[in-house]
Image 1: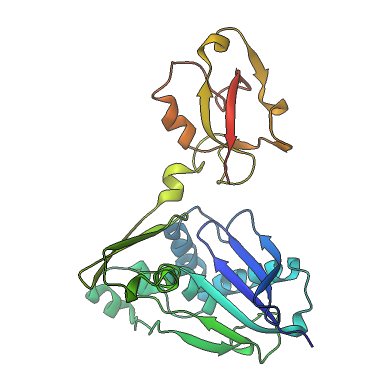
Image 2: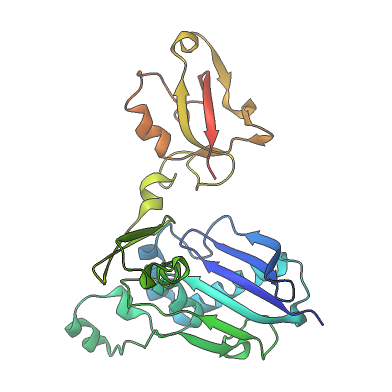
Length: 281
């Protein structure tokens, strides 16, 4: 029987999974990606608000159901899965596990005490699949959950630091996880400094007309050709990037427009001046 593993990234804007053949040196067999996060909203604050409104039980069920759908789309025999490795920020991991999360939603010791919140340990864990309610994997499959440092440093950022080997080197080094929730770590004289920011909501298409996430078919940049812009217009629906039709826009090209001539740009109208485009990935 083949031994299969699954790597599952619980991202802020969607889930991503890889099926891995553990008998073939970790060969990736298939990939499945959701086009959005299963919880309402575009950032972790929205996800926390939803969990506070409906409760951890329902939120956990939604998270696990989405994970099951990703696993199903990997098209592998689930009975052969012996290991599932999960990564994500502390909020995503807590909601997926169905554990206390309110310590990540509220600041202040008194507030937490008034709510009766006891922050859980977020150490590295190896659970069995049967311990994650609703997870559609063999009961004895191992679930690997990396550690997180409260709400400050996500498991994905810690895994990034470990994988790069920066902690074992006596040198100044910096690494960046440029996801929807971007995290950066700088090591200097044995001390690790970290920070994070909502890069996705700032640069992707949330809250703009016809905006989408950084997916294939997203307009990420616009390069104007002054000699051709004056009169030529084309229907946005007929433009393609290679064989990929354009579906929407990121904020990056809008920011770039501030440094270009004042020419009307889609998404504010269904046609735009002839341009070169580059597709978001």
